[in-house]
Amino acid sequence: MTKDTAKHILIVEDEEYLRDLYLQVLQSEGYEVEIAANGEEAYEKMSQKQYGLVILDVILPKMDGLQVLDKLNNEGKQKNDNIVLLTNLGQDLVVAKALDFGVRGYMVKSDYTPEELVAEVRGYLGDGDVKSEL
Image 1 (cartoon, one colour):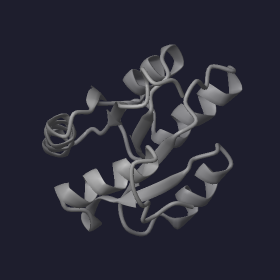
Image 2: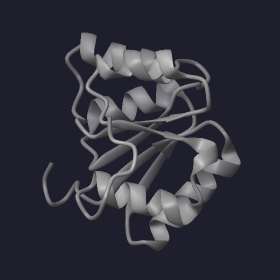
Image 3: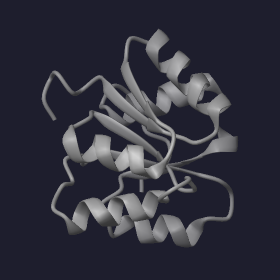
């Protein structure tokens, strides 16, 4: 990760409310944030660019989060090594599969306030403690 990409985050979330909330909260903390609303958009962005952190929802339209990771790895286009899954409760098998793709950790959507999200992001970027690293 270069200094240029360290504060650059990609949020992949299909729920507009959450996507906008994460975007607003992280931008207010000085991060440069891009968004993707489905798996195809995520694949395109992740295959072309390196981000300091990718927050990748598991359940997405067009291609789910694991399919995105699988396709990137199979095609040798994985440019991002700091990926965190965004999950709902009860997705232990999905998180376990994500380990095979080198995912660094996971966040359960319902467990995080905006302030806790920022703290978690800082941790993954080396700016603080990480709560849910795998």
